Image (cartoon, rainbow, N blue to C red):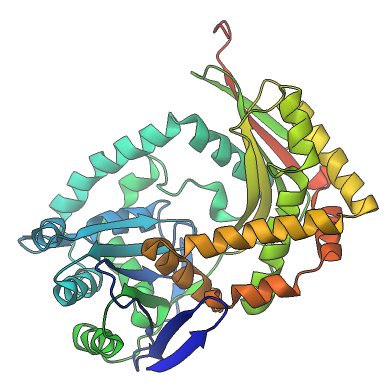
Length: 427
């Protein structure tokens, strides 16, 4: 395996790519008892339209999440119980553009890694088990529908995007999951769960060569064809629905404000732009910003307020939100403050402080093996080496934040999503 040392982070990474196309990343941590492994696929809820082996497919909304649930089934076996018997904790999640399966353990690492690679690469779906899971996922969908935080973000994406499938909740709808069959699950697994569309990342006191040997033993040897994703029509940057308010059982309004951003970058260019966007968010409405302090002192926002840059395959948005009785006032203040910063500039001291604070959080985040494995995997899918982020931070200039705010925080790019208390509900 190829060894790379990162002096700024005092980290070493071993990497290789197997003949089947699987990238492997190992971050050794000598002396640590905890070990983590992430096995991820570049496939999420938005990837419902695709072409595979010359044939076009359109799978039901929510199928990636459904597939994640069903992958823990093996004939006559309970994968979760097998991990637990070895003292390991296993789990999985589906995002808009990625599905991840992972475990953490202190002992029996080799056996746990074999089990992880085995069950994720072994599809097994019966009509009975698929039907049984439907009721479980229906309850999950209904739970999210009753969650103000989930609804306020879903409404925002519906307002901002005309075509991009981020408009659809990750779990789909109660109606859409009725269409999911074992054959559809097999089709999606074949199209997206091939090693060349996946990544294995491991961190802990482990032998990199052993990790590679286990992956070679457990996974297919040949390189299979991967699906070509179709995210639909290109999006315009303008937003047709500037504001939507719905009523739910909440004590006070909660809101999300979003601004559409173009998403046409990859690799180091994407990572640089993302840092610019995150630092611009810090300067505009971060906890130490002039806008945050003013709105907080006026009682317009509280400690729930926050935001940042959201990026998903094919789209991106600058967002902020929280609880407030005056969401429209917050929106107007954000627009005005962005215009002021774009015109007057961001002070060098403020820029340096924000940069140092954000950089410090990134470094501290490396203390978590799970977070590090996730970030290494997610950024690798964007063709970027995450441990290069110190150099990326060095390259960002204050003027780029100004330009980002000038181009992004515009009224015609904005939408406001509000969940209001039901009429007649007391404050």
